Image (cartoon, rainbow, N blue to C red; front, side):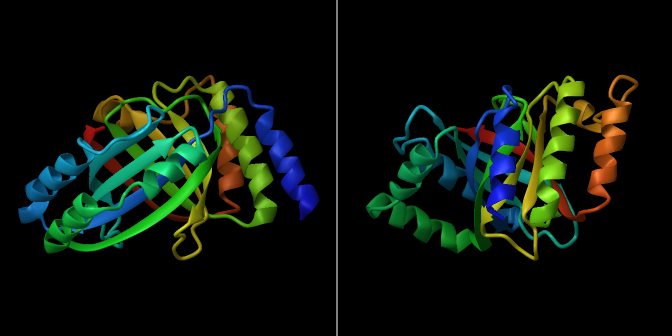
Length: 227
């Protein structure tokens, strides 16, 4: 097990274009009639809450998802520093936070949170408004091969936005442990994502690796506002 972890660490560290991304997501189920009120509450709190320059908060709707996904909105907190992310999460307390939570509880049907980190990316996350997440159930013995194939893929493909593969460390659900996340400038770019003549071989290799892991779910978010 120790050797597997060491090999994976060395493998990921060899990709010079990889940028650490640590994240904390809160997924919210909101009735459509209350969506604008919730958006105002989120904006009222996060636009006034102090954060470090390397911490970003974004609030998005989730219009495209499977039938089993209850969440309609997502608050994503990201940073290139786990310490900065933890400090920001720990700062969410006090009377203003308590009031915010009290007001949100009136309009939010259900909520859940998860957190994790990237293993390999093509660089910094962009401000593109559309993001798509694919979730997979991956065994530890499959992880190295998956990361290696994904690294080859993103070397062969010029992504317009951000794309990364990482682990869900906290708040995993139903065996889901690994995600791929990509961003797009608009819906047209999202529609046209996929292999072309230049990267067909890398896509085929990566698809073969994916055949050995269990696909769990996917959803697409559309940015409402970032802070």
